[in-house]
Length: 328
Ligand code: PMV
Image 1: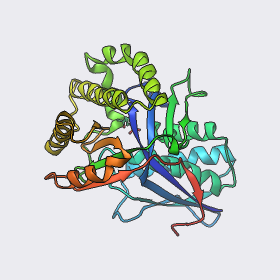
Image 2: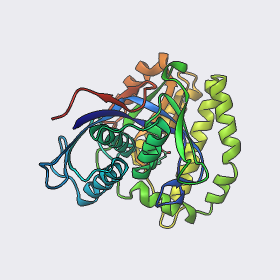
Image 3: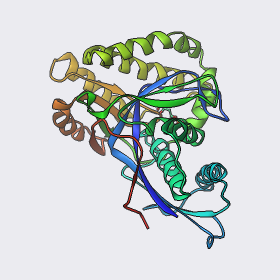
């Protein structure tokens, strides 16, 4: 009764920011993302009659907060309900990247936890249902289930809001070079941020332009037009962060190094040295999206920016998968 899953983090090109139903995590709009090859979470789950309570271990970290533990237990409860089980579990999870720095640790974490827990109970679900079950734990986890480039359709309600692959990982030779900016935990969680989004005077404007933006980005991906695609994703990141900064209270996820990296990327583009574009999730790290052929140069340049802790090259990756390499 033990199973292990590895799931990728994902970077959103069109962001999920704001929910129509916080309880079941129904987003205001469809979002589009890419799975990240080098930013993954591995989770092993074992159910046993000999366990009196759920035991949760985050590998390499001293403690699991009560809030974090409760979210893991809530996920286990949903899986137990699905499988008709009352068994308690031991859960061990390991990230290849620091938590809560804008690299969607909740996406990879809850995608791998959901998949591993289901498998540990001997149950499987079709990808669509697995994506919906993961969504209930973390919205972005829904997008870490399918392969490659993914769209999360907001659907009409809890029963049809799930993510699916729009292109396989090998479809397009682009990379996400993540400039890791700070290892400190962010102060305002994305859960709080989603709830505050509607308080921004710009939120309505953001939503008005969304359908057009989704159509435009899909056309640029269909035709692999990197320049058009890049401009759309950079505009979109600024748009989401403008909403964050004008929420009440305002949320500023950026650090000074975030701004330095963004300005560098823009400068390399203006001087025609390298064409790459930035996007930023709910944290200070900057995701530099580039052609694969430019990724080594960009990583080297990013590493020399003061304040950048690391630069990690991510290729488009598969979604969550079961592995035999258990953590215990
Ligand atoms: O899954 P959450 O609640 O952490 O949402 C985070 C949303 C963003 O990362 C900011 C954008 C996105 O679509 O990934």
